[in-house]
Image 1 (cartoon, helix red, strand yellow):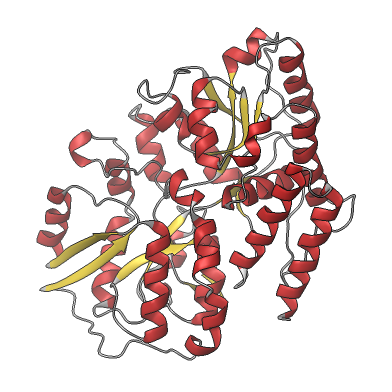
Image 2 (image 1 turned 30 degrees about the vertical axis):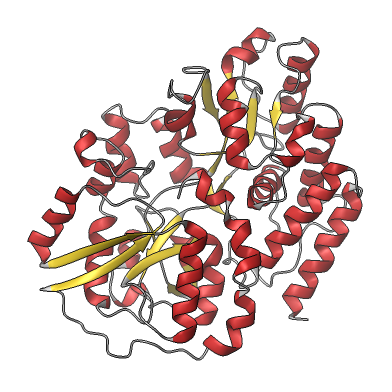
Length: 442
């Protein structure tokens, strides 16, 4: 859910080897011994997040008769536990994490219940713009419980010191502004790109590709970035060229996404992060304990080819494993957990007593509106507009089952290009080759 948890996804990509489990677990129908009972039961909820306040959970129990046993597990360990339990057809939790990037895998493996059988998912669509990211094979296998998408942040004070008072609307304007900031000596390296070989580099490229007007894969999983004129190719070149031209700190070849946000953007060492995380202005850059640029960093519409571009979604969801003991009770919890009023409370709309630690943005538009109207979300109107109108899935037709291997090919090769070991062209060729092999199953 947090930027830190997203940064460790690369660990999972190599550790789980879910593809090796496809044959063993695809036939798992699960559900053995499951009960439809929804009162007088205890369910286990396992997420990579701290729980809501106990008083809030107690109120849920009082109204439903369902007791919640909350288990906090770090993100990569959680995915390992989910996979191990599903493959062995053993109980792990009644409700647990469904990450946007794992939807293709989980759908193919049939490890989670279709939630439309328990929840009015059609009725949620208008309020949850990121719900399509959790659909696989026509089934909804997770409900987004936080809104997370990539955004562009700029330090307006540093831009103004370079004589820039109108924020850039296109990639060309944005690049020219960065060069002007550098030329005028405001900061030596104005742009933060996390070039460490990790998931954050992949998602940064997805966002940059979208800004250049394209997608990375088609519905069949074929690469859309092989041609030098394609948006994905141009995006990779732009990122590598930014490093070569001195717009990005040289040390960023070993900097991960959250590290760059915390040690560069939050300290005013750089002037902008093109693919930042939604919520960071309020939760990181606007917090004196973690930032020396309080009230300086703002969101801007992500610059595109001829105007503002889309914002790539990367939310976490919650679903019901096939081996759940009480799936109907779990569904009631998910409905409650993702209610707009509760989400607003979790994010701080009604005081610290109701806050869920580490929870930043409601996945429901109504929750976002409440938070914004109460003045509890810096840049709330912008974020709400982005969530409603410009937040788009990285893979419009769903993440492929082999996503971890694809992401690893992306960040490994782009990192190599950043170090100068290979050219940007050779890096793209290597990613194309790996993607074609993955898509063909060879």
